[in-house]
Length: 492
Image 1 (cartoon, rainbow, N blue to C red):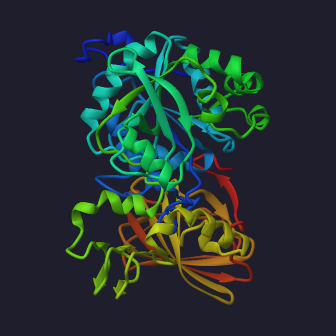
Image 2 (tube, rainbow, N blue to C red):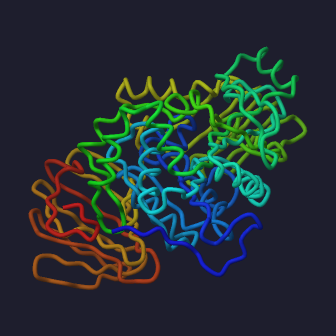
């Protein structure tokens, strides 16, 4: 049913044969809380251009493409399936597999599922497990470390990657390394939870500790054996979830009933802190998991002014010191006056102000906002769909105005509404509009009326995005007032 595509006729690193290419596995979940308000649960940070060219997810994909790598496997949620697929295409990755988790169960079930999936094709397949939201600027240096670790993984070791620390950091876990093992790999003595500052300073000073990057290289059968030994209760439901998976368009849906039986547990707690066949590959290059706004600021330290301020995009800093200001291009202009040691981040619908040393607590901010029912806690004003996106411009009693952008080839579902009528005005591009039995082309500066209850559809037959303004009128304007009859994206 599924195929693990292997690239042929390429120049592989010296210790890799063509049949032994590394299978990249991109973990693409996330709650979108740590970099709020730019990242939210409806569109977490891996899909955002936080640093460098493209989104973090696209950077991860490009980093593990080319010589020495098989076509990637992405494991993500149903909610993000179209975004993940579209961004794959955006960097030219046409051949891939996307596994869909019915719900987030943390990293251990995801790792086991993809190991079982790969083992069904090749039990000794070597998997490189990488998060989708990390920054690693030097892809070549990182890949050189991966290929050095290949022999250790083939030999049956689960290799983790440790980052050489350049400062005491309390936001990361640490790895205590031991003696040399194989090809620059070191033995792993123990994992250390996130320390306080004094502990971090002592560990960094000792030279015996590395930051835990959460990146792993292993054989599929070796990882499955580790679960059989240390987390056997996960084996049966994960195996059934994979075996009973079904194909949906270009996606592989893991079985929801079996998946729900799996506990929520991380790979570190389930396996890594218990296994005795672990090794560490040190990596000396720059790396960050962008786990806080302070970590983001660290990536832009080369842009600091004489007072230590970092100002990005739509923002100004006046008489400020050691502060980070970031404003979205399409949001309000952010101005800081007389700020010191402050992080200020503004989007179109929310602003975060934080002491620079308190940004690890943004997750708790989101929890408070969620508890209080603040919409911005999880959702953006812009709602992404497989055909494009829309945003609400104005809302009043019995009316709502939206801007709708439909990408080239995008097709909305054939649908009707019970409580509202719609007026569409095309402002860019051309729309193909179906209303009952009538099909028409609507060009720029033209409009069309969709009566209440009429079966209708909108699509973009052009080669550029189509933009229209929609005015909804009626007694109820919720997104759940929709009856779908046909849908290109199988959402009926």
